[in-house]
Amino acid sequence: MGMTIAEKILAAKSGRAKVSPGDVVTVQLDTIILFDNNFVPSNWRDIQRVCDPERIVVVFDHRVPAPNQIAAGAHRTGREFAKRFGIRRVHDVGREQGISHQLVADYGYAVPGSTLVCSDSHTCSGGVFNALARGVGGPDIIYAAVKGETWFRCGETIRYELEGKLSPAVTAKDAFLQIAGVHGDHATQNVEYGGSGVAGLSINARKTITTMSAELSAEFATFECDDALTQWVKARTDKAFTPVKPDADATYKAIRKVDLGKLEPLVALPDSVVNNSQPVAALKGTRIDQAYIGSCANGTQDDLELAAAVLKGKRVAHGVRLIVVPASQTVYRDALKSGAIATLMDAGASIAPPTCGACGGGHMGVLAAEETCITSSTRNFKGRMGEPSSRVFMASPATVAASALTGAITDPREFLN
Image (cartoon, rainbow, N blue to C red; front, side, top):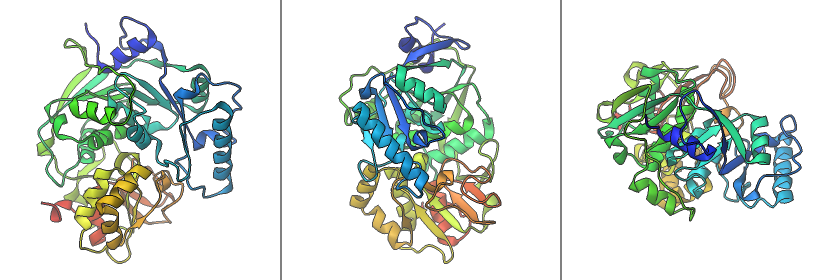
């Protein structure tokens, strides 16, 4: 029997002819990303050597610019580490700043057939590039930086066949919430996305799906490669690569179809992403205090342009805070050039610098007791964005923007035909 995309990359990077579910393999790593949380004193270990400075990237993203002394100290430790070993790819404050997973997309750090690790759980975002990317633990990232390798257990693969085309007010975030709401947890499993509907999804939209796949507890999330993906990667790196296709006789635990054309705007209720999605109409009128657009899943140029289309010529409701966080300096600059940032600001949005920010409860918009937020970020767990008594609803940037206008959860189709 043949292999899935994940199985084929695991085999190639471990020197094996075949990898099957249940196999434990040691794989060579192409890219190892360390971010600011790794350099916090309670996590950091003094490394005496690295495998290859050209395979390592240092990123400050979770708490940047530094909001406190601990974060500032972690940044300094990271700078000293990069200088000590001659690491060139350093994304510091203001200098190519951004969330690590967006930087992977901006700079071509993941290419088809490659492997990438970082100790942030949403690292599976990089699988959009027909690669294997996964979050690993803090000790594992230290080992990876020293040895240039790590181990994985190969899980079974669920394949999603995406068909049809999204309507203007329905997004890839809604497609993910449909999958999470219907099929729930995918622990120990890989997810593979393909089908005729992929061609109608931008690379940013596809990246939303792989990034959010962390919320399925998936091991790896991968997309098949097509011309659009090849062009995106070649425009950002001169690395050689070979696209990886699943074998025609690959074995899947299940193959499920998703008709993109039949989807509607969805909202995940507070405290859980899986098995917790409702049509936006079911939540209509739920009052909000804050609306948040950003994160590694939905802080792209596409997301900012979509929000601007909803908000253009209008004003955010009195008493609602709309916080917009571009996922990288590249996204920020592009949105400035397009006029999206001006539109958002004219509507009353506060534009924050690229950072993980309030998505992880760090800064730039944490919630007070009993407050309600609707967010396009990655998680809605209790206490995730601030005080545990606050409520976090999750939706697409279009739904978040529409809700900011009315002061309550609102169907974006009221503003987008």
